[in-house]
Length: 209
Image 1: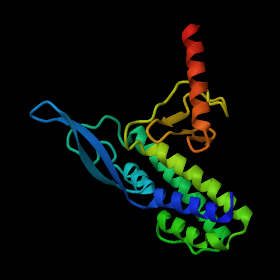
Image 2: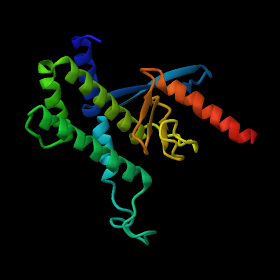
Image 3: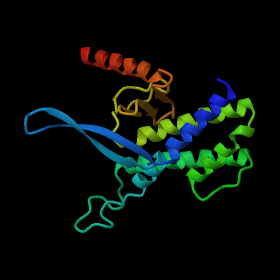
Image 4: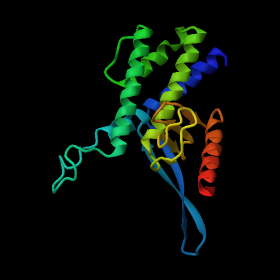
């Protein structure tokens, strides 16, 4: 991959992590003559990091709502996973800013934008490493945000670390993340399809047994 393509990749990943996106969905309906037609449903999604932050700072169960609470100080699994994912990405971006001698900003998004601004000055090795890590952050965030639906959680061992129950698969975004070893899979390099075949084969063996 040449430098310009790598910089374009970094910029695109930063936009998905940091910037709002417009989403258009065609919703079917039937008119009075029973003809099937479509109308467009338009929404604006926050950037993935904003979605993670919103999920992570949901009110603690029962603290801000009337009535009895189930478990003092409990948070739903989504909030805990979003919090840990957001914290991990914040730590990695701070490390990159320190490495590139970029002053830390107030938000993770601003740190990432500052790194993108510095990208043209990096050597080829640094560019490749930054693109690889940002692709990993995108996959973590896209898996954890669950904007469309909760991720699929197959009860099979991770093919990388062999820990069971750690895989999270976002079927809409076609990305997956292991909460154990932090490995990721996606459609852009075909790895998500290999993971799907692995899950299907493992599930079939369990059913046959």
